[in-house]
Length: 426
Image (cartoon, one colour):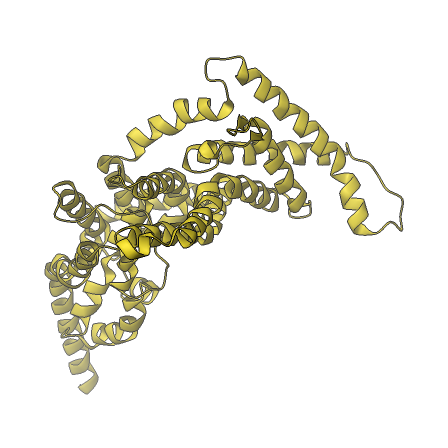
């Protein structure tokens, strides 16, 4: 049975590897990761505003509150702008690293702004509403980044550019080479904007949000989808495929948009609408629940696992589990396959239920910084119940889930060590 399963994954391994190296998925992953800085600044600004408003004396410091609100608006509230720039930049870098990715990024931003409908202030001054600059414009930003980058490369590869004579400074040459792509792509998205303005959706943003983003939220934002993605990610890891690189680019845009909805609700004084989100997934599955296995290894009978436990302990306290994954090893280790694949899912289901019934607070959506130690990693959510939940999962639940499987493996390994030492004496 093991051989059949292994042979099957040996056959599909190249396909998953190819999927993990897909330039579009890599561009999405890189773009979303690069926005974590602005998202974190905006998230912390929201939390500080909430804390200040809870204190009557601090709530009177309107100047600071207004500044924090502005910081949130231009960071978290403008995430779609950063995404569309970064999408085009990273996609061009992946598809043709010799082309000018900076120009492609600027063109993508221009295109995004062209399809964004204008509004008016109370003084009848034209202004860009923030409606589509944040979570609601996330998927539009990704689509525009991809389309504008592809058109940019198509124009450049066909040589539809202004050629400058030799001796002209490279900066000037790049400027003129990007002129025709900028004009053509700007015209294209101008026509797209005009076309959507004649429909009942009134804008491309509204179309993408209604037809793509909202339905995906209903499907991908459910606990069922989270379970499926978690299991698939761990199955890929078990067979030596980087499951995170395959799964997370698909889920991150949707889950991050849900986190931003939670933060917007908190700033407005409302209850966060979503239980699931990127912060929820990352904090609950922190370290892949590997810390519990390391704790068991420290008291193992076999010398092999005690040594692995000593080496993996400090990194695991900070969420780094590569020494454990490849030192135990966990990859293709059928003795530990079941807990390795299912532990994350069990923790996610338990956390979802505890949050649903109100024992644990809903996650604010603040993106945790990788590398923070256990407990501190969850502290950015601003709730003691979430900190206690992570500590419970890592220090109590995780060892329990690993115990029966590791105990059996430890006894088997210890017996082999004894037999080998006897053979050496002979």
